[in-house]
Length: 199
Image 1 (tube, one colour):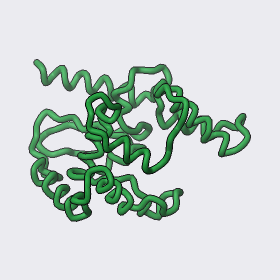
Image 2 (tube, helix red, strand yellow):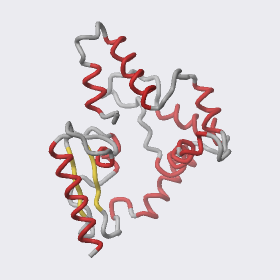
Image 3 (cartoon, helix red, strand yellow):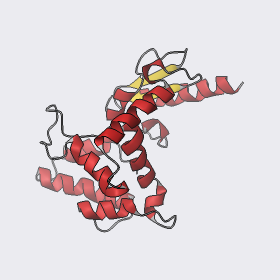
Image 4 (cartoon, helix red, strand yellow):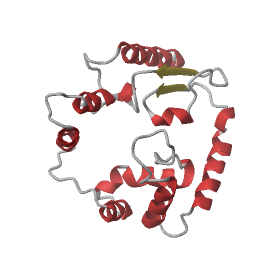
């Protein structure tokens, strides 16, 4: 099962479920089934403990720790509650994530380290003056990460695809009969573009 925005929204709007709480429970059930879990441990300290593990034999080695590290020292694009244009209150401001970085990786991880790391990342990779070639920027409007990408006219004759009905990594999911047409079209464009580059 692909856990797409549509799957989550359809579940949250399912009028056969009696109330919003029952619907979020159903979303959680779907997630746990996909990840073969029987219990959701949502405790902060459990998450910190898991992401602090460095053994190759631990599930943190599957990418969660590495991604968190990159976010803490290179990207800093946290999905926080700082904006007033969201329904979740102010329970997880950007400072929460900076603290999380320090709790996982040590006290040297601070807002200053992150600010300097982001500046270095943008300088090293070009930021808005990106100079790479043969890059296809693929974004979905529902994905908060699209704000960090090119959604029109990337520099250096690179290409982009911007889909209004998809989110993070939708183009990498297996094809489905329920895919929006623009996603099907995007996959075709990705294939043909890469095919041209390889000739």
